[in-house]
Amino acid sequence: MEYVTEAIKREEETFNINVLQLVFGIICIISNGILLHLFALRSSEKKAYSLQQGFYFGCMLNGFAYVGYLGRRFAVGRGVFFIRSIFCIILPPYSILFSISDIHMSDLVLSYCWYYEIVCAIYFKIHLAFIALCDIFAIALYVASSIAILLSRSTYSCVRKIQIKRQIVVMKQIVLMVLFAVFCQLIPYTFVLITQFFDLNKKNQLQIYMWTIQPIGLSIAPLCRLFSDSKLLSAMKIDNPSPSSVLKSKMKSSSSNHVVLLNLKCKITPK
Image (tube, rainbow, N blue to C red; front, side):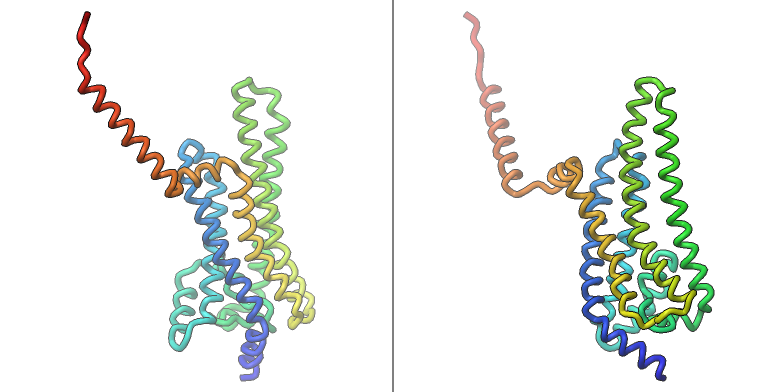
């Protein structure tokens, strides 16, 4: 009973931080959704942007996990249990295991699912280390492939060199995204992993602020990508035109149609 009471008390202490995470979770969903929509419009570059689409889709899933986890605090009555059961059953453990967990609570108490009662603590540590290794392997793989392309580009023809330049630009963007993801994921994961393996103070409030890095980072990354790319901004303007531009285009089309009708009615008499 004391175990549950302590968990509830610590949850109340972190209410303001969780509200901040909820806001950034909503921003994460909207920004990544816009990027996925804009990339889908660029049909000629689908192969080049397929990896980026997967990255932003994963970020959007994390955003949904944050909103679902943190939004349940504002539910009343039986709605709390309904939200808990839905998110425990539907969402995949890999993408939301740490998003739905109260890492900052003592002994890894989870607000719902009570994951600690189902899975032993060693599984949590192994899962944490596995994700950290995957992040390190991913960034190393992208960096190695970029270096290989740069070293071998002198042996290709001019047309192939142009294609390689485009590939390098895309790969640089991917490397930056992976680096940002590693920064947002690896730092909180590593911090919690160290506290668990070396039995440090689990009630340390620093863990709460460290874990806020993830929703903030996954929200800022797509926003920076969206506003730094002029092509994406122009595509967004074309896809969502302003009412004034729509009115002007309609007026131009109606005037051109009127001119065509007048020309059709005119008769040319030869001299």
